[in-house]
Length: 553
Image (cartoon, rainbow, N blue to C red; front, side):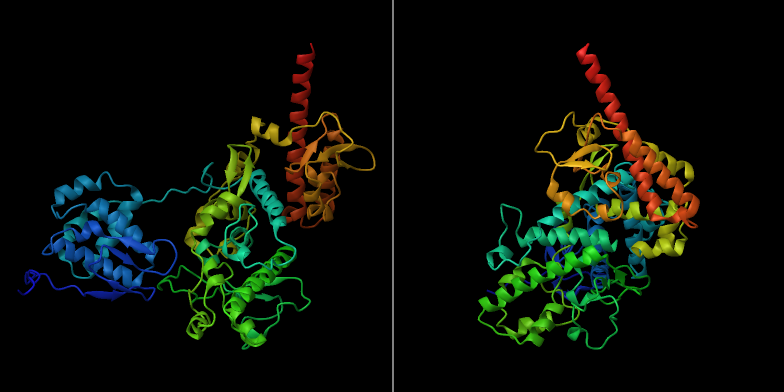
């Protein structure tokens, strides 16, 4: 008995291709319920089961699928996933009735309406006139994206919040092993003591996010060939032969664009015009991480019983992702096809997903907040912080764009911030209970305490002396000035903090008087923060003394 053939489509509905190639180069089965559009990253798999449940002879199904295929072939997987989610809300069933669409339209979110409007426009360009009335309705809606730059929980971090995040990250970065672990288990398994390579790469990923001021997708695209000592150009023909240790203490990084006008996203295809220099301390940290990474890769190669020459090994490591999937340490490096795949300049093999940043932000982006108690430095909040601060400091739009590689239209919203808004942001401090606990003045000193003092008096103690030993601020300012506001510093209740406040103000006035460019000085910004923290410390000490005196009475 012959199998039943599929019902023939009406003449006005053409056949769709059985397969197509996604923008990431993956062959996709058109009529599968799930489309796998990319090897990694956000939205790599898209569920279209609801659309596949429409009758095979449905004209709407044909139009939606055909337009979705166009997007899948030309746009990123995350874009297709966003569009699919919006389509499911606008066309939940096989119905083209305009009145029913209008009822659904009114309850859609603004961002969803914008997505549907763009989709319908593309559909008409593909000559699908059935949805012309739907598009006319969608065109009546004017979408205005709200500016969240100053939102208290979504926008710019205050100086106190941002400094708190950076200080906690600096402390956590001290957990990096001094010597590369010799056990392959360290690189392949999660550890209960939070010292495995999995946690280390998350920490490095988050710190790269802050140092480079780039999006998560741009960070996970980086390979070791994108990092060189300052003075060596990325235009050199023999990049694989360039040494990392040249005696130069700073590195610079080449990033790739992910948003191109009139161009679709392609993995590592469009390098940014300018490389980004790293600080000396982070350069040293990154080189230590690279040493650990190289040891893990060497152990993995030896585990396979394979041997590579020094030149082959250097070429291989340069083409490996800086933030890898740990499967790289269990890969079969005796397979030459695998090595050839890694050596391809635009290979996505073993690159970690950008989803790694969700856990990294929660683990390494924590800080204290004078507004909400606790805060997490997400990618969006960090970008708002950098761009708002640049605009409020009077930088021109060209410099603001360069900070995060944002477009000029995107940067203009930040230029509209007024002085009144800045004053509200910087002066809206409240000595809430969490800040009292954070500053927590100490009543007396014991023999076990490590004191923070100058030649005149003692002003507080160190919570963890080992953290203070690695503090970078001590080299720039004399203690106890840089200690105020630090989570590792406990002020002494009866210390003369007013004397330190007068010293900080006098230093600020000296710079103001004798520095020709004081308004843009990093020193003055640091002193402004220190002065604010000393005032807050004094206020909390006074409050605590009054409270204690009432108890004594």
